Amino acid sequence: MTEDASYGAKFDGSLVYQWDAFDLESPNYMRATPWKNAENGPITFFETPVTYTNSISIENAFENGSLELVTPISSKMA
Image (cartoon, rainbow, N blue to C red; front, side, top):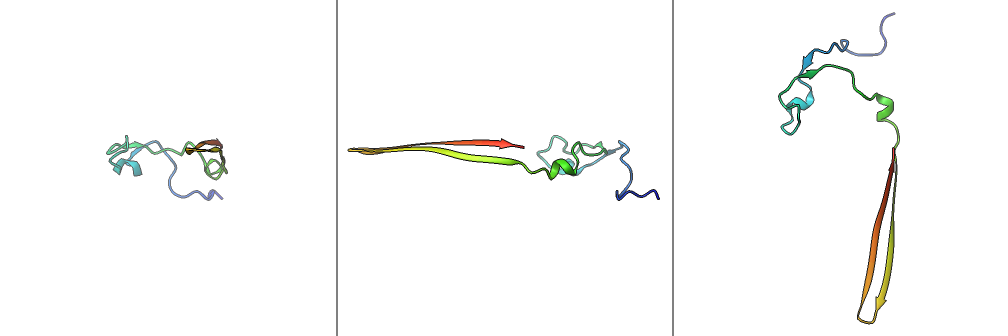
């Protein structure tokens, strides 16, 4: 048995117009690039990132008004 659940021909490095060759804002616009495997596989794509978002709020009222200071704090772990 020689099949391994892959679909299509093997990557051979030939120049082809990828999806971004038709995007006006892409650096590869109207440019053929090598047909090669992706740098990252499905394990990287489905890896679950962790993101924390907190904030600090300080509030005080005075006779002539009030003051509020808010500072967002974010942390991203992937």
